[in-house]
Length: 377
Image (cartoon, rainbow, N blue to C red; front, side):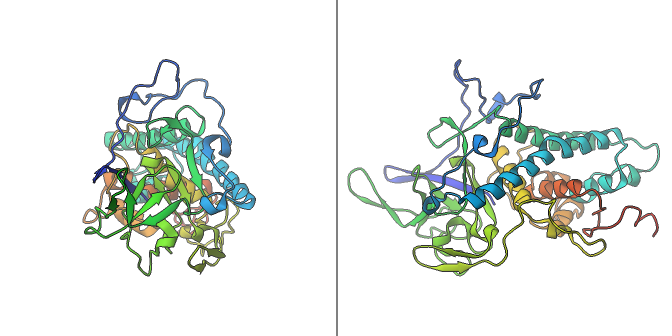
């Protein structure tokens, strides 16, 4: 889930667009906006950082912090997600570009991104030039994640200063408000720019920014009660790029969640990792690989999408498609989308990562099939 950010200045509400600024001579970290992003990863690559080195995480649960159990699960999920971004997807891209990928891998690129793999193209037919460029874009995204997780880059906060990305375990760092008090004591109403001027926005109690959600009106309703912030009842996570923050929602943790005004029950929690999920051949759908790892990979797409890429990936305001079947339709149905649309869709990358991690199965139709299943048909 991606969110817009707006801020109040004097008596106007203005859209915030972070512009690139050159790093100072004493700051070797790189801003991920505009032309400052490096084209290649450094060699040798610095070691990957730990979860709490990459993200700012607190244990202040009443303001979005994490319990120890939540932190432990996120740490395991982060390691798996970064293995996917650092190694598994790049290796698959290299094989695809050479035309020697396994059939199951080629078909995942086909169904998720509309790129014909070796088996579909046929013997001796090279990878089309456009598909070389397109897998290069996927690789660019993976490199952007690697730069962040290895400490090569940081992103700017609201004030433009570089900092660790904030990672929250609930949305209590956001408070719904209908007005703010200006310096002269006057009251200024906060109204959504996205939902016909609905009264009220979510306020970051840490930095003072205001969130205008893309998923639902700010006003209280059945699916998006204001005390659940931008999570609503159905969201697993959301990323606020302008505030350099990712939030894992109560739904992901399952069980009960109590706010100042309500108590909610969210059922079973997401497993921490894709690897721990039991798969039954011929029965398990790839959607069942949903996990904290899958969620982190999805949200990372939004976080790194602010950087320089070959196309404007994950830009503010684009429609998102969730779930394997919708991702496939987006990539392969010309009446709905295209390869370009798939390259802009965060969940598509997360499904590619999940399928490649669990490459002990062929997931081309969304079901865990034994290798050789399709050859026998």
